[in-house]
Image: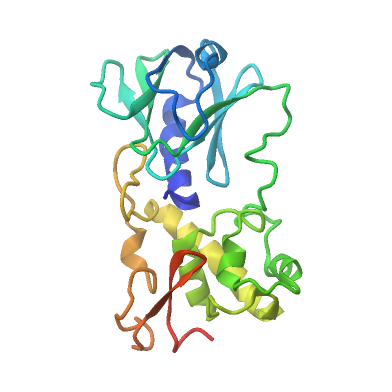
Length: 272
């Protein structure tokens, strides 16, 4: 599933092509996404100019000149592509926004777990956005914040930092890699991780996410950027997907277990 770095990669890839462009036509081929595209979506988006493209967690937000917005979520296999008008349509090309320069913004999603939704200007909040925790690259996120939020919590620290209401963007891959760099075992109860360890962990989360964004994200199955080029942060993984292989730092075989229904890998020699 695309996580924060992959979505940020898409945002950066799409933004230069759509800023200041007006949507002159909308084609909805299949509205049956995770949250169905409303029947009046074409009327909502048509003739609006795209003034900004931002990201909140794993959601792309297109700000329109009327004050309305569009929310796009990539789900597990969604892709947003910038194409020339008339580009051949293939299976799972669910929606096109035709822009005034002759290009298309196309949403493609084989598993249909993503979404393309209107966010009217008279709705200041949105149910998909309102409960999200702070952005990990913002000033609102710190080790002190994690420490205070974690007190008396028995949940495993990896599950804790993967909770989008605690902090957005620390998905399975990036949580595993961040915990490795911080030297914290993923199964530790969140409430028993020290303030100093949370300081290291917050720094590691920021570091890992910045590196992944710079390198275009992590490709394991279906993710590709707006230009169709895959990310390559997977080349730098220390623990995720390396069960049984020697740790790149200490040589200890990497362990793996199921934690919160997700594969969780760590190094017994480096993480305590």
